[in-house]
Amino acid sequence: MTQPDTLDGMPKRLWSCTPTRLDTWLTCPRRYRFTYLEHRSKGAPWAHNSMGSAVHAALRDWYVAPSAQRTPAYATELVERQWLSDGFRDTAQSEAWRSRSAQMAASYVVTQDADEEPVGIERTVSAATHGMALSGRVDRIDLRASADGGEELVIVDYKTGRHPLTSDDARSSLALAIYVVSARRTLRMRARRVELHHLPSATVAAYEHTEESLERHLGRAEQIAQEASAAEQRWRTDLEPLATSVADGDAEAIAAVDAVFPAVPSTGCSWCDYRRWCPAGQDASQEIASWTALGARETD
Image (cartoon, rainbow, N blue to C red):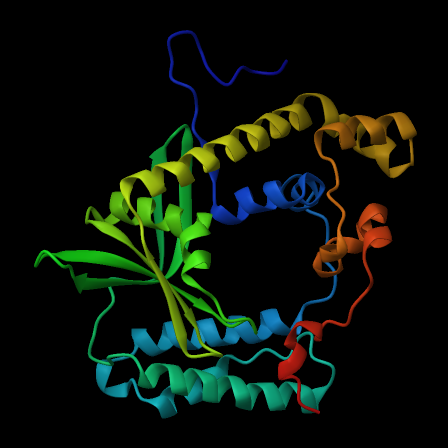
């Protein structure tokens, strides 16, 4: 027998979620099902993800090291040490990008104060609000002087994609807003500023949230969470038993599951880790090489 989420007189259980989980539901409910409910195997790894992971890990370790050790040369060493070759076309391409990424990290740390100690490096922060138990891992949390003479937290997110970012990207990011709210609750300090540090272009896109803008983001997150959690409940109570029938091609079972977890096909399906499981995504997109996102930055 299915147990209710609540008992009479008891508060409703909070739904645990991360920015990535919310974004996955918003982007494509079918992908959400594949990711969080069925845990299907992913396709081949992407070269740009390997590169980004290595750079993020290098910057993490750079700040963990004693300040005297935080040099550009050490950033270069850390990228080379953390390097992943998954997804690259061949060894030559991987080595070219390892060198380029190491230089990118070295150039970035020159712009940072090696003696400054962040209050968080890949710090997990969380907050219970609007019926959700929000959590996320922030690349970096700085403590800086505020305009009124006090101190406040600043959320820093590293970006290694090829396209430069703007303040609109920082303003509209649901993830960054959630990090602000969660950092406030976890560290019990004021926070409002978010920054996207785009390493390839050596630029920073920033935005200072207001209470109103944060509330708008939380309202948006709550709406997404309500939809996703209701779909999960339907999966557990009604749809999961149909999984075998779906795999066998039963049209009625497929229609029932797709009614709750529809595909949202587009050309962007080329980048989906679960494209091989999704006929709709295959029809809407082209198969691409795992190094395609390197794009115009490619060197042969």
